[in-house]
Image 1 (cartoon, rainbow, N blue to C red):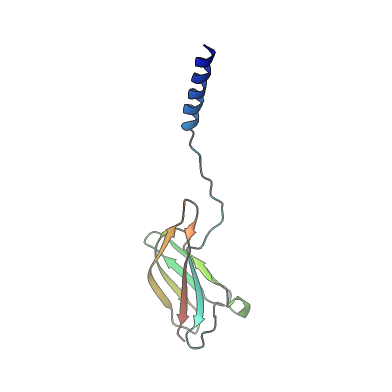
Image 2 (cartoon, rainbow, N blue to C red):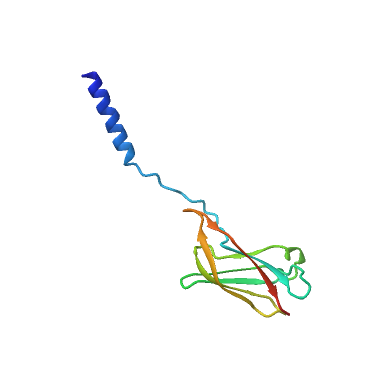
Length: 125
């Protein structure tokens, strides 16, 4: 009788535990789906200071910018697109033509993270 009760309690515990669903909690840190290195097309020098990136999909838009006049930020990447999707990415900067790249795909790596798509924008004066 004790053996049967022990087996039943193990089966019951397993059955109840099996119905328990683990909830995934993602950190509240925004990840860039797109990172853009900004360069001058003539000199090849990094030129992110004063540049702005805009990433637009059919349902979502995002942008970021680096303040002008800070050459130390020229080496930084501009980031945007914090959701999976297909984007048109535009980089603009005073003194240069807009750089546009379409069909930029951002995919999920898992339930919380994105695969980062790296691009290089060669800006034309």
